[in-house]
Length: 183
Ligand SMILES: [Zn+2]
Image 1 (cartoon, rainbow, N blue to C red):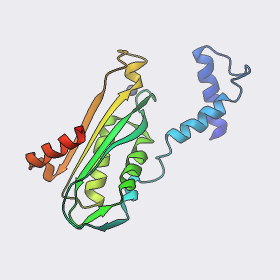
Image 2: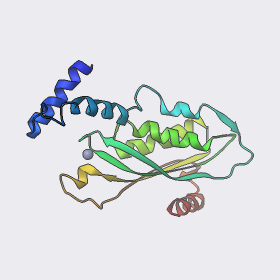
Image 3: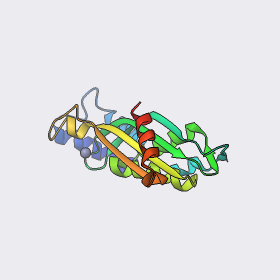
């Protein structure tokens, strides 16, 4: 694969107008490839598998992790988008380790993504794997494809939410959780 990709990065540098063989850029195709493989290391595993280890829930109270930082690449431009992810759920019988939720976010972020789908995938993983009563995922992100190109709005923040289970019906619970997410 390396043999096929390295010329592609070289060609990209040329198309942009630079010389890939000049000093300082000779190793760039290799470094860029390594970097891209790191950006996308969420492929090849199922991020939901991080939720395989569970513990008995002592009660059915809200669990919320706020401000899980992530970096991803938009699938339309391969440009970074990054921000914070908030994950909440109401357990039924099982809970998971808190760091596992962060690993789920990381697993879905490190792929070519659209923010909307990533939000849904995280909520679905929590809902399905923990058999939760309800789950909410909220993502707030800045998209470099909106900042460095196109409409060039660097301060625009995109918020997406996915709501599952009892959160659909219980508007008080939903509001309480959303208020906690807003801090
Ligand atoms: Zn984009």
